[in-house]
Length: 272
Image 1 (tube, rainbow, N blue to C red):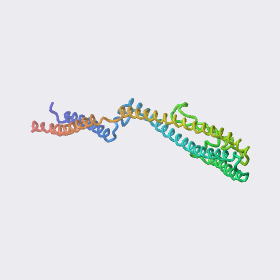
Image 2: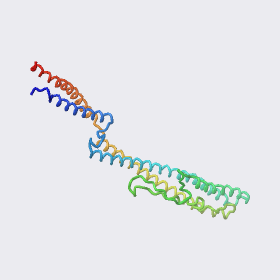
Image 3: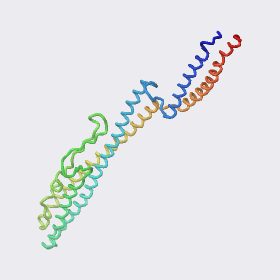
Image 4: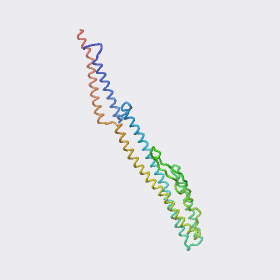
């Protein structure tokens, strides 16, 4: 029906053009953000799944950093024990040297002086070796390395057996200024080296376990990121096709709206 009061063709064209513009704006938003889901209205269920995945990914990535920090801490402590190892070997060599009868008492006393200084250095290393203020060589504190959200997602690292440095190694009070004292020190230093080796081994297998945890967390985090991408990220090829279609539809809608707006003028010809 030809009418001049209500231009229904123009109203319809304007409504269709508005819908096209909304779809065009949505495509532009998705392509500019790189996300298929930019708000709950885009995909409410998908948004919920994505946010849960993001939370899990964030926890795993922080857990990976925690585990690596734990490895760094253990490497610091184990490196200090490597120096203690050299000191104990030197102390044992001095004890062996002093145990022979071919040295005078004065010479043994000089050896004992070096021996005692090395023992003091073990104490110093044990008390001064720290990581972020944490010392594991002169106390029995247990440090927990947390790398997951569950209670058992952690590795407990007990303080070294060297709970009081030289005292923990049972080398305090040793003297090599006599043959008998030197021979007694040799046996005790053998025990001390065993205690130190046990402590180093503890740090070693804890580091290996943390490295395994890092590998698992990295792989799991990567797979979750891939899953989150499939849920949330925009398919650029598909969205570009939609953008092109909406651009064509918007141009056609504008042209048709212009045409529809001229239709009432045809009625003037009948009124003339």
